[in-house]
Length: 112
Image (tube, rainbow, N blue to C red; front, side, top):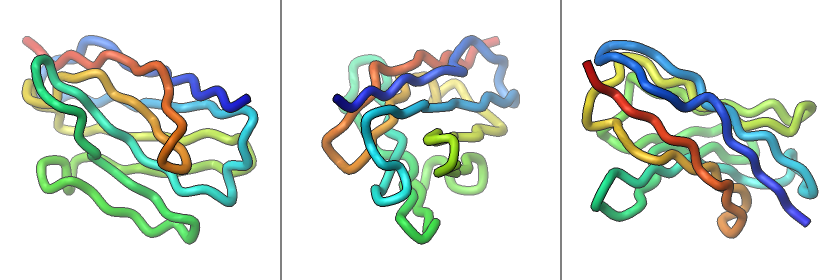
């Protein structure tokens, strides 16, 4: 059974940083693609970052240059480093592995 557990969310002031982590079990990290999605209040879920098997990354335009996705295959953990956070980054953030496996989400709130 695949289990994904996100951590690292919280309340941060505009301009601040957070690092999200997604610990996985029941799935081989090294042979799967992974991504971070987010769902702002009242809006649909959107993909913000993707990392492929070779480490190739893609980002939504809204987070380019501010967010960095990375993976530690040995630790079965996915990360999202978020810098220069803005109020519009406020959302529940979800990790996704192999397109069909989702974590429970972690709340990120950017507010003064």
